[in-house]
Amino acid sequence: MFKLLYEEYHSDLLNSNKSSSIYTDFLDNMNDTYKKNTPLGRQVIDFMAGMTDDFFNNQFQSIFVPKKYGYKIENNKK
Image (cartoon, rainbow, N blue to C red; front, side, top):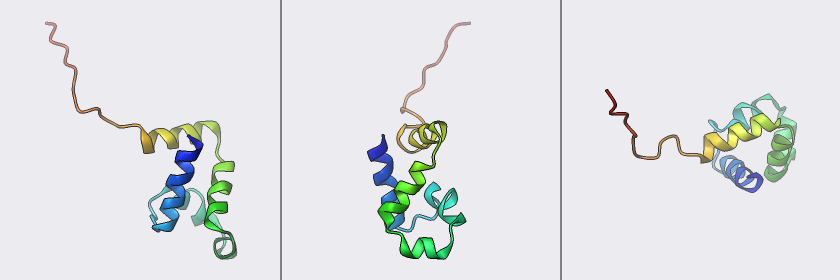
């Protein structure tokens, strides 16, 4: 889970995906000196190091767990 999230956030930084939570929940609150002088990989590590367990799990679920599986189970009981 750590590796997948790290790679996702690093990719978001490389592609300037401003809708990513690494921007909205972390970098938007950091000063320009930090953003300029800190390597991208370190920024991802700093972001992930500050996550609570619940936030980490929610991030993983929202990014990697499908919302729908492409089928619907219907209850036909009347």
